[in-house]
Image 1 (cartoon, helix red, strand yellow):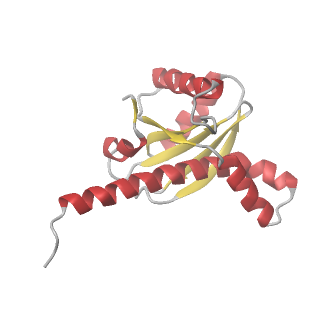
Image 2 (cartoon, rainbow, N blue to C red):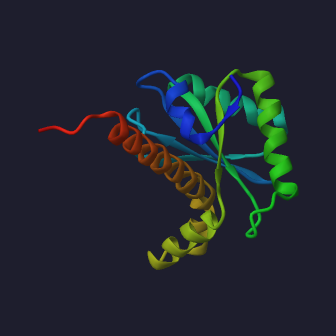
Length: 167
C-alpha cells in the first residue's frame, strides 16, 4: 500500500476494518480510533515518544489488536496553506512507517485541531492537568473525525450521482 487521498481510504480497506488517526507531535503521538462503520472517531490514547522504532511498534500493536485497515495522519500545514518543516517530519514518519508495515496512509489537514479541542476542554471547565493529559488524543480524534466526515460526504455525493431516483 501507499500514501493515498483520505477520500480513497474507505475503498482500500476491507469491510469492518477501522481507521487509526494520529496526531504526531515532537513529544507525543495522539491516537484515535474509528468505529467499523467509519462514521465516528473516539480518542484512544497517547504514545509518549521515545525513538521511531518503539513508537512505530506501539502503533503496530494497536493495528494488530484493533483490526486497523488504514491510518489518517494529521497534516500540519501552515495557516496560509503552505507546507513547512512539520509537514516534512510527518511525511518522513509515514515513509519510514511504510517500511515496517504495509498499510494505506492518508493525510488530513489538522489546522486548528489543538485549538478546537483546547477551547472545548476549557468550556467544559477541565483543569490544566486534565487538559494536558487528553489534548493530543482529542486532537487525533478531531483529525480522524474530519477525515471520516469528508469520506462520508464524498460517499453520499457518489451515491446521489450513481443511484437513480426512486419513483
